[in-house]
Image (tube, rainbow, N blue to C red; front, side, top):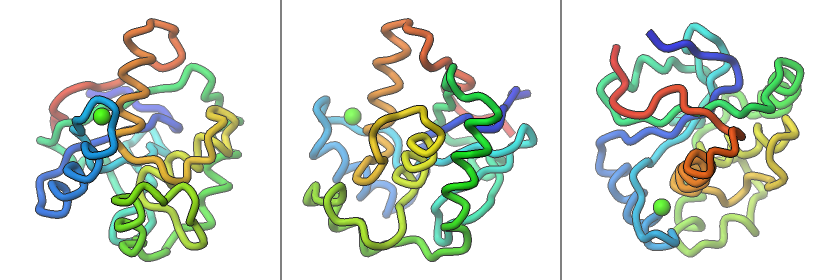
Length: 172
Ligand SMILES: [Ca+2]
């Protein structure tokens, strides 16, 4: 059983044609030329409730990713106060439609400059981490692979900035 905390963040690999297309596009721009995860989200409750940008930005449950490869991390600096502040900031996107029109911008690497609408999954998570005072980056233009690469590096460095909550196949 996973011991989740509000503010835990995750990247996950789901199997769909769109997911494969996203990973192809991500690998194109990634320094390591590979991308394993196509989606990202925020854990907002210990019971596994999430806040994500899927077809609609809203609340879902981590259980929907049972059987998928997932990396869940916890920032050492994520205090309850920071969580509630950051979550309060991104909750205004609740109910919005997934901004599919942003995907071509990611493909040409312009998403960080053009953001007049709503965030895609990894941008929503990045906006949250930024609002919570954890990361200086605004989150715009970031991809799930960017976050995965950053976390892997932080984990390797053993800086204790992030710790691994789950790394592997999510069990139901
Ligand atoms: Ca990568």
